[in-house]
Image 1 (cartoon, rainbow, N blue to C red):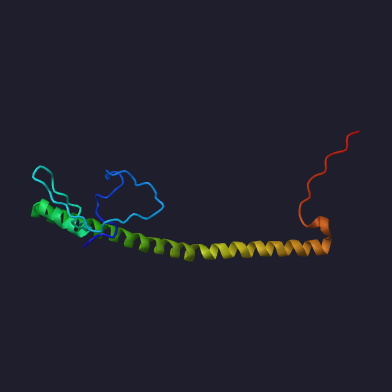
Image 2 (image 1 turned 30 degrees about the vertical axis):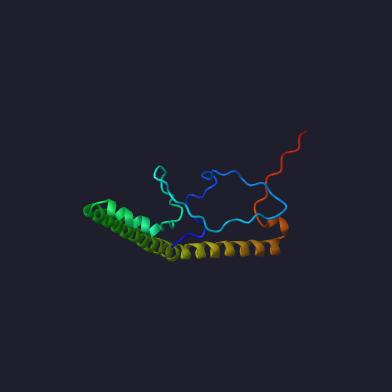
Length: 146
């Protein structure tokens, strides 16, 4: 598998050639370059395809012994199942708490609202029968100074 962006070593920091100045005419660029390593130079690995993430992880499995890999796998499985259990418990607990609170407090809220409506109705009847000043207690008027 090859990467779409080319080799991993083709970053701007690793390029040693200076940027080409812009010319009026396009300069033909060779498409294939053969590099023959000399006996004193290192081999150039730019032609090799990049490793995928799966290949890198597979190479890491060869680095660690089998007991370490199995232990890490078991720890991962246990932690995932623990998180799932905690999530499931929290969903169930929140459903029980909220539904119980609605069932327990809804009658109290309805009764309080009904009592307020009755009180408001009595106040309106009293206001219609006796006039606007008799609906409720009026604040005391301050005395006139002499």
